[in-house]
Image (tube, rainbow, N blue to C red; front, side, top):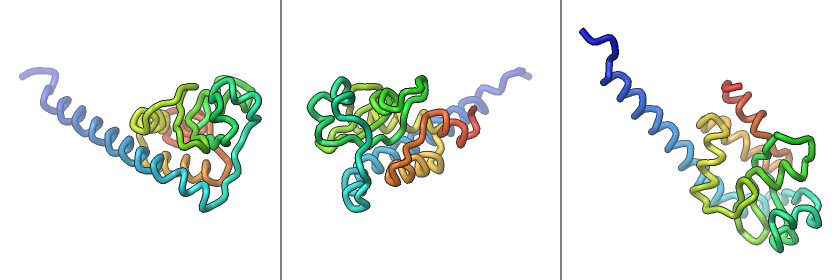
Amino acid sequence: MPAIDVEAVRAKIAERDETRARCAQWCAQALQEFPDAVRAIRTPTRGNPDFLKHVFGRDASTGVWPILRVDNTDNFLIEIGHGAAFTGSGKVWADGKQESVDTVAWWIAARCGYSMSVASTVFEKALMGESWSVRDALRAAGTV
């Protein structure tokens, strides 16, 4: 009898991958709804456009809504610029680069421990103008 149950490991991998994909799909849907939601709620933009133009270029002048900030710095503007954010021009960003909705969805999902509950809270806080940091999200997911 083998010591390693390959089929059990395969089943766990399939379950893990399905959970991750569901969370990323949920995040992609939330990202698609985000611009209309911030306008409906009237969530104010955050950050100094003069500083943020170094990351977002001209899009900084249209306003930046941080969704999930990085937390490797004590500078809130750097955290916004290198986290996940939406600009008033309708572009979505992660890691300081404009990306596709799917790429940013996976970026957010991974930093939420692939927990839809945590991802939902991240988006809710962002809509309230109180964006979480990655550390906050991972702590809520129980991975830190």
